[in-house]
Length: 231
Ligand SMILES: NC(=O)c1ccc[n+]([C@@H]2O[C@H](COP(=O)([O-])OP(=O)(O)OC[C@H]3O[C@@H](n4cnc5c(N)ncnc54)[C@H](OP(=O)(O)O)[C@@H]3O)[C@@H](O)[C@H]2O)c1
Image 1 (cartoon, rainbow, N blue to C red):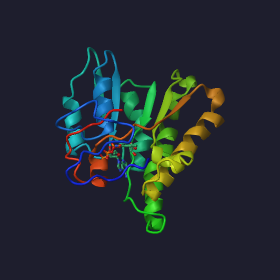
Image 2 (cartoon, rainbow, N blue to C red):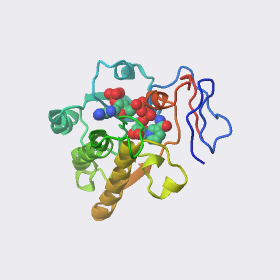
Image 3 (cartoon, helix red, strand yellow):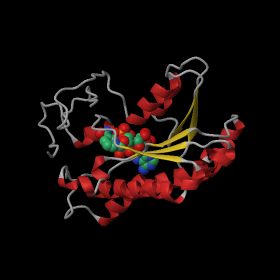
Image 4 (cartoon, helix red, strand yellow):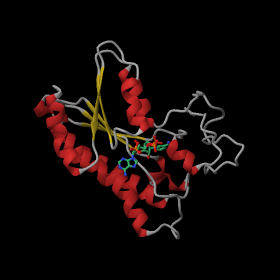
């Protein structure tokens, strides 16, 4: 059943979810921050959080997150190509030479339009952030993940059911450029798993379900910003 935008006085629910199973107020700013928060609560864990702008309120709030015993947050700016080139040396300077799990979480949509109203420029922008940027991230962290460096790690891509070609007959929302980007991301993830099969890297593709975040609040007006729906 398609998920319809709610009216202003409704809390949006995914079709499979009869009622929210978790209520969080104030709402978390995004999935990436929540992943960071939960990982940091583990003991003896180093979490490298990459942000575009360290002065952004969400990024600036990360160092205040509670940590488990002997766990650390390392905040790194990752925006320009030079930042990507500097990532491994920057981490090495902090004593980090391997990564167990890398999560490519960033994603965005220029808008949610139809096949007739999505502009090619917007589709290209959505492809860039949802598919090309994760490729750049993967290529950057690969030397830290691969078994030869002592890593043997896992690469996880945050995708979406909206990028599923097989799923189009079940859930077909607008968001053509976004869906194209996530479909390309799914291809990339599978391609990495096939082409680098002998290298021991594990690749994961996640659909987080429907979560109210700044991104989805823009899509579904009237969400209220107080619900995080976990199904
Ligand atoms: N929320 C959902 O229901 C849902 C469902 C399916 C899939 N997802 C996926 O889950 C991931 C997280 O989404 P979210 O809902 O947490 O969204 P969000 O709160 O808007 O967070 C999106 C993240 O992507 C980053 N980002 C946006 N545009 C970027 C760009 N051009 N270059 C680099 N980074 C960029 C943002 O960085 P800044 O903080 O610097 O802006 C932010 O950290 C995304 O990949 C999204 O597609 C979400």
